[in-house]
Length: 226
Image: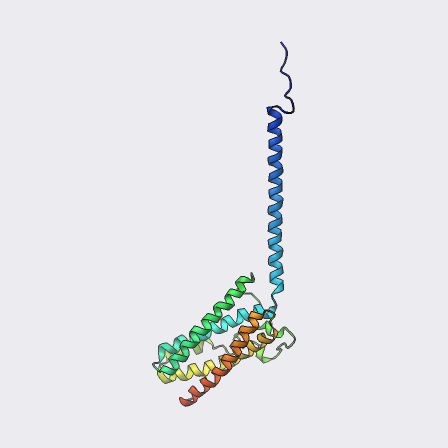
């Protein structure tokens, strides 16, 4: 009795081996392509982060915080007074600065950058050709950005009503705007992204004009000390 002859190259075993080889090659190729895509994504992300200047990123982060405190103060005074002028001004601050804060949040998201970082605020104002290495860029003793109200001042505002609340709100908001204008002017001059320069310039012009309105309203109420 003779043994079975070995399968020819074109037989079932040969076909199975060839198919397995092709599948293995496809799997290796897919893995290589996947790895290259991941590497490309990492390179693009790192490049995009490096391409965003410290001024653009720092302004987007710090002005968000600055704006959101203005929104908080405007909300408090609207709850404390029935004066139509103050309520109208406060509503404009709420809507405008909340919207602008949202724009800046969106920039950081689109750049692939975190909304918060460990480095101190305002360091970006020391960057650029016209860096601010002075008190304008320095944090206060409480670690706050210039113009920011302290928690004690916000609590005081929350506890006042009527004209007293209006006076404190106007006093705090004037300081807030003065510092905001300085930040915005620096970003308008030093930011790399045109969209940042445009919004920063708009903020500087609008708040500069609004300071005069705030001062007139405060004077009409007897000044900061009443």
